[in-house]
Amino acid sequence: MKKVVLAYSGGLDTSVIISWLKENYDCEVICMYADLGQGEEIGPLKEKALKSGASKIYIENLREEFVQDFAFPVLKSGCLYEGKYLLGTSFARPLITKRLVEIAEAEGAEYISHGATGKGNDQVRFELTVKALNPDLKVIAPWREWHIKSREDAILYAEARDIPIPVTKSRPYSMDKNIFHLSHEGGLLEDPWNETPDDILMICKKPEDAPDTPEYIEIQFEKGLPVAINGEKLSPVELLEKANEIGAKHGIGVVDMVENRLVGMKSRGVYETPGGTLIHKAHTELEALTLDRATKEYKTLVGVKYAQLVYDGLWYTPLKEALDAFINSTQETVTGTVRLKLYKGNCTPAGAKSPYSLYNQDFATFERDEVYNQKDAEGFINLFGLPLKVRALMKKNLKK
Image (cartoon, rainbow, N blue to C red; front, side, top):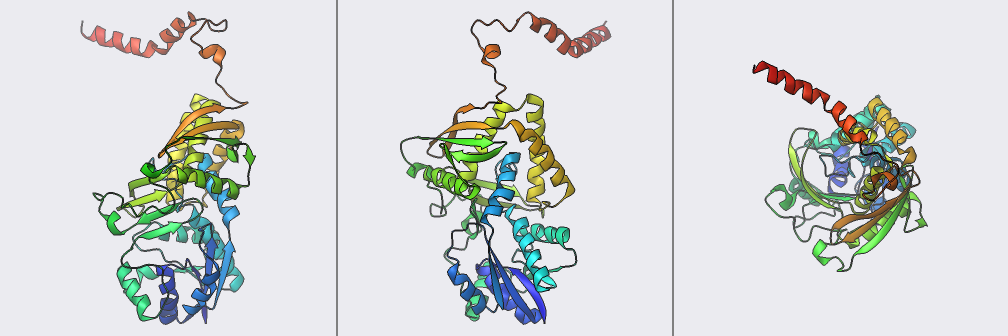
């Protein structure tokens, strides 16, 4: 009998897929649940997967690897997809797929399966990672094959087969959760004219419900990586959990956006990323203090491309590795502490310091100084503006 390793979440789609794979491929289904810090109760997953028809399930604790090797490198890059999205779903997929491939190899499986739809980005992310890590494995993508056309169809399919599912018709949102963020799509969000429903947020407080008193926090970095909050050294997972708790309390990190999917259509999503938003903001402020102008400007350009690579599922590629090398080089001096003021959804810089600071008060001061000769600026302006002067003279001569 053929073996298929399924990326299993316990949600609607993957619960239905177990039964569908057995019915349509006459195969043994082995599930793999990636614990990325979803905060869900893992205990019932085994019983649920087996009851749905799986032969076995791997429950993999990948939280530390997820934060240290995927979340923090993305934060270190400073990238945002289309200026807003911190990519919490995007960089989870290559790690999940990496483990799927390892289990498939250990089990002697020929196939990997996933619950991504034929309209979305995740199908690309899963399958490009399989191609990069083991091109001999084949992929089964049920959403591209079966007769189920909607989430309501999937719910009916599950109900007809007594498959336990967590989704109801009254709350039809498609959600993806990990320790870094929670995403929401579908339902009322499919009309971009609709305001984000009041009941949609499950991590962050609404800004109007956040505390009426600001809170100040300090995030410490070493070579671009966050290592402590308010002076307390923490492991990567502990640090992100702490940042999440603080940011969520103040309603920070909620993004409502219409984005351009890789497959060509626009979609609307709401993302809750409280801790990642705090770290991203603090990291950006520290780079402003420690990177020279040319490096900072070029790193911003690299960040745009980096975000696109991560969003498009191109994690395991030569270009991504090359950009990582550049980014790591820029982070050698990104060490220091940033203070942030948190208040009702706002995250405002309130101070930064670093032993590698390029800010020199002796030069920048508006008061009397002994290190800067203001007369030097005249020659600089004359040389810097020479192309403009030459062009203006040319245009003047043409009019004669």
